[in-house]
Amino acid sequence: MSRTLTINSRILSPQSDKPLTPAMVTALWVISDHIDRKGIKSSADDAVWLEMPAVALRGEGGRDDNVWLRECLDRLTGVKISGDFKGNPWGAVILAEWRITQGGSLVRLLVPPAAVNVLRAPETFAKVEAFAAYKLDGHARRLYAALADKKRLTQKHWVFGVQELRSLLSIENRSSYDRWNNFRQWVLDPAIAQINDFGTVKITMTPEKVGRSVAAVRFDWSWKTIDEARETDEENSRPDIARRKSELERSAPPLTDVVEPKKTAEERSAFADKVMREAGLRR
Picture 1 (cartoon, rainbow, N blue to C red):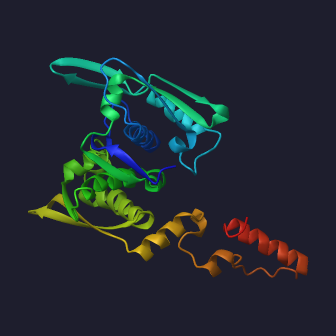
Picture 2 (picture 1 turned 120 degrees about the vertical axis):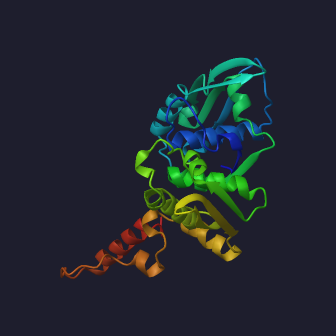
Picture 3 (picture 1 turned 180 degrees about the horizontal axis):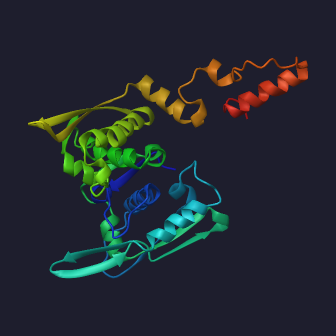
């Protein structure tokens, strides 16, 4: 699977008649990337059959029985898009048909011409790390993509209005986030922490006030050093339970006050092998 996805900037935070789950958003990003890599051009009349590995849509850590992928594709067939081209209104669905073949390893998607025009990457695009697109939670995923769109402009910072930021993160209708403190504590701070942990860029946030109210948010970013990026890549390859722990912590058994009976040499060896396997250090 490619390490980066090329995404049409218009679908970084896609709008539809139905709420989109993070998995559905990522699937749209992957489909957009595939259309761009195949060099598929816009079409007025012809739908396009796309073929791609199932793992590209579900992510390398996704269920290989494709249960969630089937649910995701099924929901995408009900997502409607619409617009107005030269004064003539139009409407379509994102997916007209989907098939999973070859024992679950290959996905075939029938994309209507209007959806191809929306999904294909024009001059305005963003490049997003594939790992981050799958690993980050919904808010972090959308924020990362929005910032990635600005990084391509060789900018080192960007300012979003608070309402614009709410729209990018698809929470403009969530009254629980109306107060700035709630928005920051429950959405922005966790999203930035995730991005800094999993990505190859460091992000900081500075609220900008007009009077006593926060009107905008400035994001500054800098690329991690080669060593920091290598460390991040190594951490990303480990199981979640073993992330950010020393080798000793990952291999040591849990602490307990219970005095256990002495084990034989064979039992101790078997127990050590089990701990190492669970920590991902031995297969």
